[in-house]
Amino acid sequence: MTSDSVITVPAFASTRSGVRHFFGTRRHAARLAYEVGAPAPAQELEGAARSSWMLSVKQVHGTDALVVDRALMSSDRFSGGWDALVTDQRGIMVAVRTADCVPVLMHDPKRKIVAAVHAGWRGAVAGIVGKTIAVMESRFGTVPEHVQVSIGPSAGVCCYEVDQTVLDKLPEAYPDYQKVVRGHRDGKAHLDLKMLIKEQARHAGIQQDAITCVNLCTICHEDLFFSYRREGKVIGTMVSAIGLAAL
Ligand SMILES: [Zn+2]
Image (tube, rainbow, N blue to C red):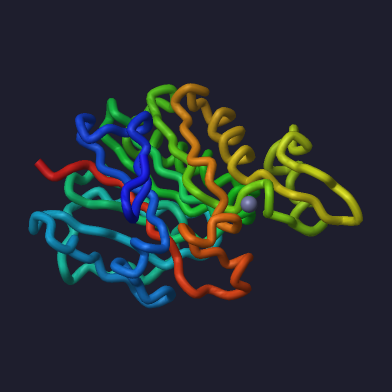
């Protein structure tokens, strides 16, 4: 379902489930502009209940997860770098920013845990989705079979050309990597990052029918999305977020 500025996936999480989520578009991003690289203060959601927060931190193309297991305060500062955020706290929307990389949202309806992941090729190759699920398991007792996963708009296989440096790293990320590569020629190929992440999620124990995917390419759809690849520089990012509704 597409509203004016964000995309939501009812099959992934309906509002009835107590989980709020969205994948942002470029029309939405401007209202949630963060200064990338600066220690990110937790931001109170504009116009929302006082107990609601939006948390976005510096992303470093790594695999570490920031676990937020207590209420946030205005004085909180997060000065490290994390590409996954996990929380069991109500009223906190954990957010990632992307422009071609893949925003991945997850929730465990049994244990009431949500996670937002920023996965570019580096994060995917390093196994960020499986590692984040492992954090949900070890910290909160999540069973992977219960987890719902939604893969958001990102560079699609239609446009996302990568070079041999990236291709050389794929076998360690996913033994069946040829399934996610198209048109390999002269040291270049198109990479299906969404499918790679889907396969890794399946490998981590997520059920096939628990994975939804927004099949929109950020490079193709200039009207909807910023694209680092298309623009050659960062002129903006989309914000995608998920949270347990405040009671
Ligand atoms: Zn495309």
